[in-house]
Image 1 (cartoon, one colour):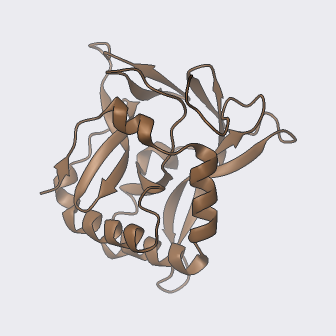
Image 2 (cartoon, one colour; image 1 turned 90 degrees about the horizontal axis):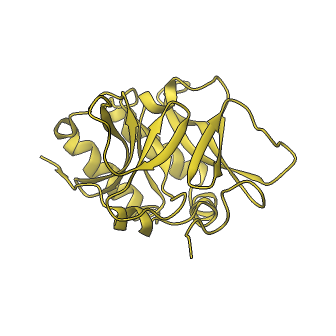
Amino acid sequence: MPLVFPHSSDHFNSLPDITQSGNVFNEVCTPEVSIGICQIFLKHQVQRIFGLALLHQHFQLQRNEKMVNVGNVALPIIDSPSNLSVAASRWAISGDKVIPYEFTAGAEHIDMDKYVAFFSELSDALHSNGLADNLGLCSAESITEMASGPTTEFTSGRVNITLPFDPDPLGGNNVDAAWNISKGSGTVAFAQCKNRCKTGPHTGHQQLHKET
């Protein structure tokens, strides 16, 4: 069975910033690499369970905080209210080990023990292609309910807000941050972007999300 590590603010804070992770992804993830990774999802029939996520942090978390999505807003929370059910919705992976780094209120808990072989094969592919520090998993549920086109996420203070449109199409840059996996013609799989992060001045997502 996979070893699911507990959430750690230290692990979250060690994730690369959005610009760094996006640059590595764009440089390394050629169409051939992308298709190969997507095929692993189809092989294990998990494309309706998981999507791909660009590993990055929005800002530094304080000790015991975790990032929780509530509707279209994500914010750091220490203790979830007793009436708020929270489940992991994004993970980093290493071998058959998974590390949750983002959560969603009202989401269904995924039984990770069912997907050991998938985690192991995907982890091998990410490591062999130099993407282990830049790509992880998101729950398909967390992105399939988004608008037909990619949503846009920006940061205000220590809150991330996701909108079904780009609030400033002429400002900053957009970095693809989450993809669902689909089957194309024949047996070819492909990834469709479902979420982008806004970077640049006045967008909240600066090159470094860390507080000093």
